[in-house]
Amino acid sequence: MESETRTATEAAQSLSVAIQSRRGARIVRGDRKSPQDYPRASSVGVCAREVYHQIADWELRAPHPVELLQRFRRGSEVENIVVRELLEDGFDVKAQQIPFRIREPVLVVAHGHLGSSRPEYSNIVICTGHMDGRIGWEGDNPVFEVKSLNSNVWGRIESVADFFKMGSFWVRYPRQMLLYLYQAAEPFGLFILDDCLGHWKILPVVLDDWLDECEDALQTCRTAAIAARSARPPPYHNDPTWCLECWCRTAGVCSPPLDFTPQKFVELHGPAVSVDLDAMEGWKTPHASYSSTDKTVKALMKTYGPGRYIAGDWLITCEEKGGKFYTRWQRLTSASTPS
Image 1 (spheres, one colour):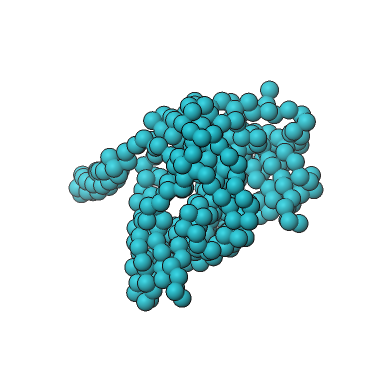
Image 2 (cartoon, rainbow, N blue to C red):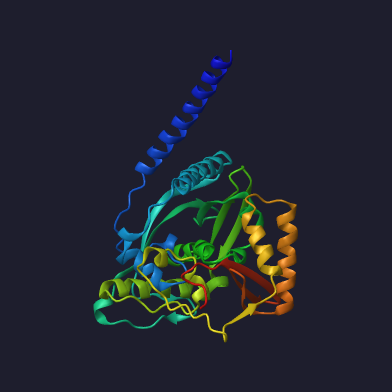
């Protein structure tokens, strides 16, 4: 009997491993890197140099891990579900995955031209992309963009402004939408956010409310596109904290001079903050202890005020915007630890 039980256990285990292995291999086979000729709207962050390296050094970017590829596939499935439900509810989805290009020179309404470029760069493509779709409404066809988010992230997003508070990766989402609206000459668009559990949030994005960000996104594209044509990378980003989480550093294509000088960073010698952050990093799922310690750390950092701080192995950035205080932290790597 014991032998039969062991055999059943081994068979169940081998089948489980085979399912995971074959699925992972199939998904990885479908992930093919391809050359990138122009900045892509979905990848335009805060650094023109990073966008440049997406074009010039695309082959050096590390392959996506299988876990992330699985997430990409599920995101595509969520997009199809959202479109199907819109159609079921009687909305007129006009088109999907609409390709577009933005060419130099660019103009931001009420802001004027971003500046003249040399004649050889006139009319070059500075950005490409695909809009998720358009939806017919009151005689117009506004753009919509579907984003599937982890339920914890989904719960933190109540407005477009919240994306800008969450770090360099999340800035890409509103910038992507603003580039769509600029190219399509649409006054507004919609984010449809799904938490992968079937719950939606609809966030309107009005172009006139975000002209500065739109201009900055266009300038990033323009700078990167011209740099790619001339084979000269743009300057480093002026805030080294953005570089800590950038793929360019780990790929070895960009070595920013991270300036951890006493004038910019204040080292916290007390261990309390770094111990709390170390503990929070080890917790893999949200629970009451995480939330409580998160509040404790943020309340403590608020007493220090705006600035950049070193606490053990952690770089902490505190900012005050619009009367609100924001705190974000990043574990220091060996390459970025202050000497």
